[in-house]
Length: 118
Image (cartoon, rainbow, N blue to C red):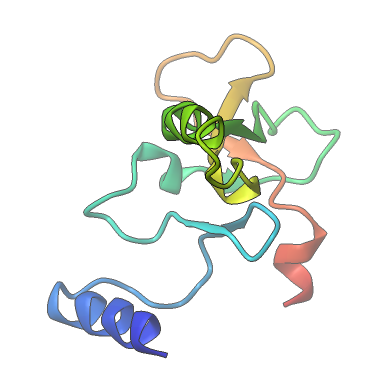
């Protein structure tokens, strides 16, 4: 589709990777792309470690929150327009430290079985 072509062309033009190895599945066919260095953060450098061992020092968490625009839409709903939908909820991916982490320590978390099954 045209959105995929636009994404691919943008990546090629900016010399960004397209492996798909750094996608976070947020459900409902929504993904967060951590591979694009122009828009991602230091989190893309976190490495894998098996769960339950001391090397895992952070944990990935995800949530969906209603976006500020949904409030505007809610106001419009009173005027006979459509109510907010799941699409009005913004996806948030964040990491939580499982313990104190010394400066210079490698950041690791469990990528999950889905990462290895693809």
